[in-house]
Image 1 (cartoon, rainbow, N blue to C red):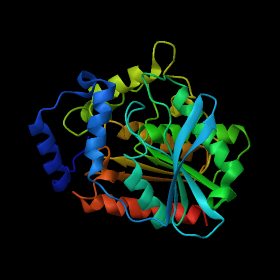
Image 2 (cartoon, rainbow, N blue to C red):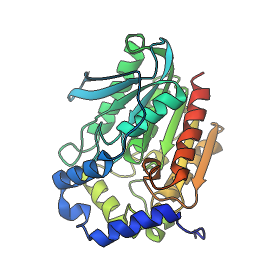
Image 3 (cartoon, one colour):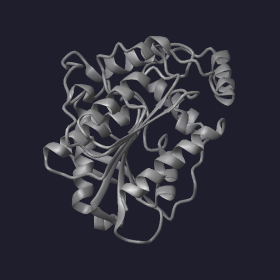
Length: 309
C-alpha cells in the first residue's frame, strides 16, 4: 500500500482534470481520444535540437513515420529508438516530441521516434512489428543519421515501454547486442490483475477502465495476453540489454513494471529500478507542474548517456 501523498503540483492537475468531467476514453472512442491527448500535449515544448527530420521507414505493413532528432552535427553518436505511450491506441510523434528533445539533448544521442500503427484499427502484433522494423532500419542505416550502429538503445513510456521491452527480447533472440533499454512505467502484463491496478485504478490520471479499454483494443479477439511477445513479464529475460525501469507510486502499472525489473535482475541482467513514490502515470511529461519530472528525465538521460558512451 502506498503511504506517500501525491505530489502537490500533480494533485492540483488531477483536481483540475476531475473538475472538467470529461467522458472516459472508452466513451470518447479512438479518434476523439487521440484528439484530446494531442491537445493535452500541445502546450509542452521541448528544448531546441540541432536537427529534426521527419521521414518514413518501410515496414512489412507499409511505411512507418519516424522523427529523427540530432543533438549536434557530430557523427557516430549513440542512438535511442523511442516508442511513444498511449495504450497502443493514442499518441503520435507530436505527443512524444518534448520528451524526445529532452532525451536527445541531455543524453547527447540521436533519438529516432517511431509512429507505429495504432489499435483498434491495427491489433497486435502490428505495433510490435513496426517497432522491430524501425530498430532493424536503425541498425542498418545509423551512419546516415549521424549514429553508431554499435551503440543503440531502445526505450519508451507506457505502451511504448512494452514495445521497447518486447523489441529488446527479440534483439536478444537475433543475437543483436543493444546497449540499454529505458522502460518508463511500462505495460508488461496485459493479463494483469496486480494490486496497483486496483489500488490506483481511479483518480490518478490513468484509470483501470482506460487500461481495460486499451488492452481490449490492442489484443482484439485473436491474441492471448499471456503471449510473451505481447506481455514481456511472461518471457525469459535472460541476456536482454541492461535496463532502467521507472515506475510511479500512484500508477496502476506500478507493480507490473517493478515485477519486470525484478525478473530481469533475477537472471543477472543489470537493472536500475526507480520508483517515484509521489508520482502518477505519465509524470515524465509533467515538468510544468512538478520538478520531480525534470529530475527523473535528467537521471534517465544520464544513465542513457553512460550506456551509450
